[in-house]
Length: 179
Image 1 (cartoon, rainbow, N blue to C red):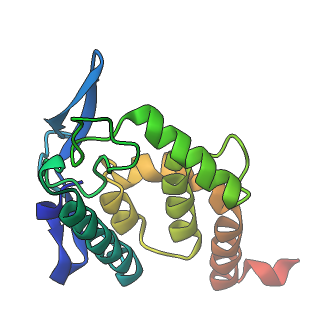
Image 2 (cartoon, helix red, strand yellow; image 1 turned 180 degrees about the vertical axis):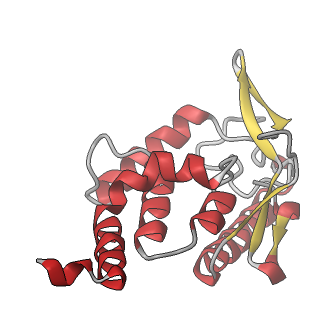
């Protein structure tokens, strides 16, 4: 994510870039999914508050590091921790270091060892659908190409909702009185 793509007043984030590995270095590449390079996701105020704190923390570090900070406008940039002599902070993070940090956080939160960062996305979709949110809106926010795709992947977890719907339909038709 880039800071310039965070829409503070809308609680929205434009997804425009991905970090790709090239040999022993990393670069930013424009992100497109389904041919749409200007994808926007909407988040709640709690996420925006976390981003605000991240911005404040990063601004403090940028100020401390001075010329050792090379600004790439990244929300989760390489920080100055253990910066080698002549090294620069502010660029894309090394994916291995992100994975190592994730393992630390995962252990601290007592999450299962096989719980991946991406699993949070799946949990969010499942929870939204089970809370009765519109499959159309859920699908659009996670950037699936259709609500059908979302329901094919996540609909299995909605057994209780499907049973309530079936019972409701039977009740409207008067079939529940036949039991």
